[in-house]
Image (cartoon, rainbow, N blue to C red; front, top):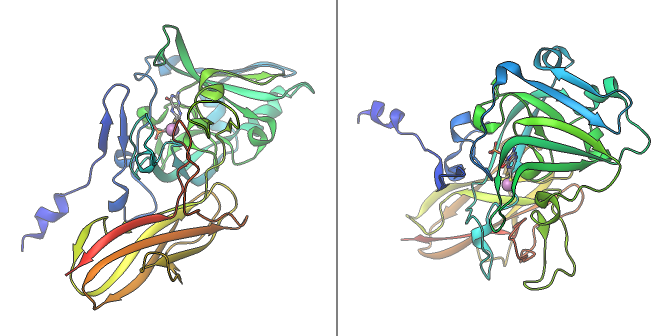
Length: 355
Ligand SMILES: Nc1nc2c(c(=O)[nH]1)N[C@H]1C(S)=C(S)[C@@H](COP(=O)(O)O)O[C@H]1N2
Ligand SMILES: [Mo]
């Protein structure tokens, strides 16, 4: 067999829309726990921005003692922090909601993981100080446009509460996997907010403003809000921390297999603490058995797991994976249905046929 042919065959991003560019990672074909830049999912609300990075500065103003504008050189020269972080779009797995919800029909690949290097936001704030009235941090990106249904042109802006902004793991990143940040992922600077869904990690940072009140931009107060009811807004709450979740990578849903021995493989992650347990069921949820980790279970990143399956009996099987985290969160049987389709984290479920 000519193996050189296979070495050239590579997975690629799955296109969901062109403008803005939304593409998902072929998550089932990711064998490694670091995703290269070419396979990192892309999620945008607007066309890519235009600006000249050769004249780039990051201003920090508002409720600070000394407003200040940082040059890239200054930011590169400050003590750096490097962390492996899983980034998951709040709309990941949206297509699985029942009843279905409108919006990008993401499968299981609106998520990726890699190594981000940057400076902790709190390190920058040592230079500006914070007023007692400081309450939230508003991050604005260079990209802008109109939201569906609106004629007003706005930029992508989001805020963080004080506590999350001051977490040493919240960084202003300038490198991904030891390379400068790719343009499509926010070059020259983007925020990385480990543990929160991806919308918090604002790309192409233009400015940071500290405010003394609650920010209510549309990407904060209208979108990225869980509305548990289809019609009325009662019971709404903000989308923040990633839910505990897992995805079976092998076998594929509806795959035909022969009898034999297989390694069922997958990943599990959470926004709080770390994964403490991944269980698998091969009989539609009647019995559960523990999986083995094939990577370390660490905060902010996914754990890879595997389970040896010896299958002699022909027939149809329903395979499920269920993760638990160190805060006691467990994947539920049913997800919290919500009008905009965020945070899907029901027990992962696939079917295979052995023949
Ligand atoms: N400036 C800006 N930042 C943004 C977005 C955006 O549209 N504009 N999308 C957010 C969302 S919803 C997600 S899930 C992540 C996606 O990051 P990626 O495209 O690098 O994968 O970026 C976030 N940051
Ligand atoms: Mo997202």
